[in-house]
Amino acid sequence: MPHPVIVIVFAMASGVVIGLVALVLGLAFGGDAGHRAIMMSAASAWVVQMIAFVIALRLRQWNVVGAWTFGMLLRLGTLVVYGLVGVRALRLVPDAALVSMAVFFFLSTLTEPWFLRS
Image (cartoon, rainbow, N blue to C red; front, side, top):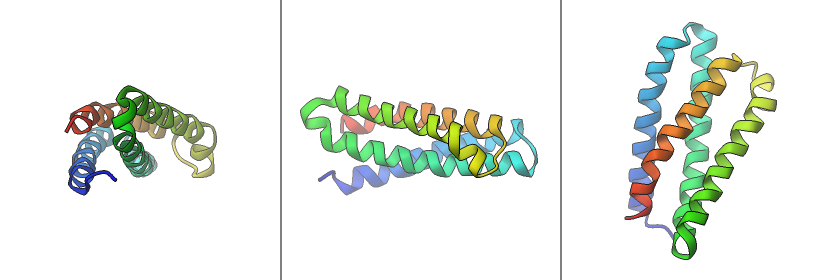
């Protein structure tokens, strides 16, 4: 079982990263529809990021690169499904939703290796 402190600190760190990026992207994609798309993407990205991190944390003892790769595939799959189904189903602005989710995943994933090594 992963140590809860690592998971909590990672959750806070990725939440801060996603929150700050959401503020910046809100300037680029203005309007209520753009802001709604960014917020939906932020929430979805944070949840998927947490799932991927906990899985990677649990599997790191056997193969840290494999565990991290699994997380990357989970994120990519989420982005594809979000783009093909989620954006239309939720009636989101496609460019704001997809760009923001991709950026959220990319930047929050950069923090993940620091926590996987601890």
